[in-house]
Image (cartoon, rainbow, N blue to C red; front, side, top):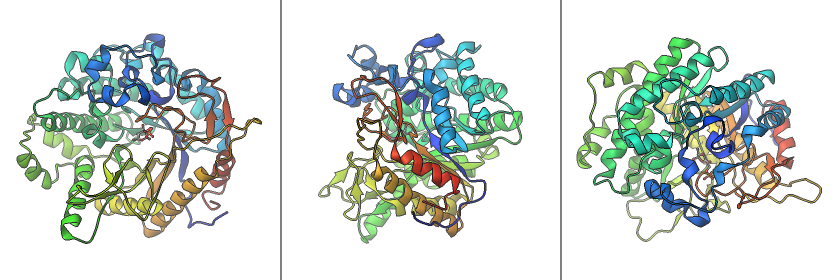
Length: 477
Ligand code: BG6
């Protein structure tokens, strides 16, 4: 057991999942299709389908991992009970937009979809778990892509706000913490997930991506306003696929490349947190022939409705150089990164860098001076379910411990941090690969990469470890 620097008294310990990777029940109770529902697993063309989703829609694949997933839809009571047993103070989950508005553009919500989330939220509250709700986690209804072209169409702002309005009204007094868009910067990297976009045939993809991002930024600001109108105590956060880029060397050209790469990500949070586009965007837009169409009120909306806190995911630091040609790169949360010789990698090639989390936290806090919330962090690894129903996962304990040590150091550095929700606290379907075998959880789910298995839940060794971490408020890591 390792002693850490103290965590704040009301630190929100917990775990996170997302509807699109956990719920299953993909057509039940009136649900419309979500982006993930049209994707096969990695072995059967997931990457290609992500790159050209309209073509994927016309195809029939043998297996769609999301259609049943871990069936959280029918197991949520059991799953939340396990989270309560670990002592969770908070549980981050997302609401599936297409359960509430199956086509996305209806005026009236689907009552059956709302009833499901009523139960999830009430179950959390019964267990004294604070819900932390992501409004859109890679989950814009597919019908909004086929009918309107996705977020490049400004009408999506209204559809999104109608959806938010329903949620804020229904869950007023029950949900205090909201995240408007999961990993908003992901729109540049996985346009289908980020913005229900198919850019495969766009003449100027960057124009489309930044225009869509502008619509999301305005939607996020208006949602923040709406949430505060419903409940002045509401806390609304932006969400960044975080991790600082390091320069490959002390060559000033590498330093500059790292600055630019970081700006590419900060761009979104700059707008959501500071309320205006960063100055560097002007040159970037001009050099990339990007011209944003805006309504006259947009800049005022952005300025008046900044977020209350900055949430982010962190899996790995990133490394870049001005000259990528002769250097080896590696996998990681879809962001290109060079191989860092100082770091070990996971089985999926994601670099493991706990100190990078402290660096990222200090960077974000210095830049925004708003409380941070780590809403995703974890290790995707292959686990073995032993015959006696146990799972020994010391590697996950090590990974989480080392990252929590880094969090405690960042807090000691002066960073305000509201909480930590470990990603995929229960095993779920991987977003990038569609695999089940890339497991993140403290709870094992019996299901394999081809969808076979009983869906039975088993506590891993890390379950007991995380439980005592929470019980000691992070003192015993
Ligand atoms: C984040 C996403 O980018 O990374 C999650 O918000 C995702 O949805 C997580 O699951 C881990 O990535 P992957 O590809 O291993 O599931």
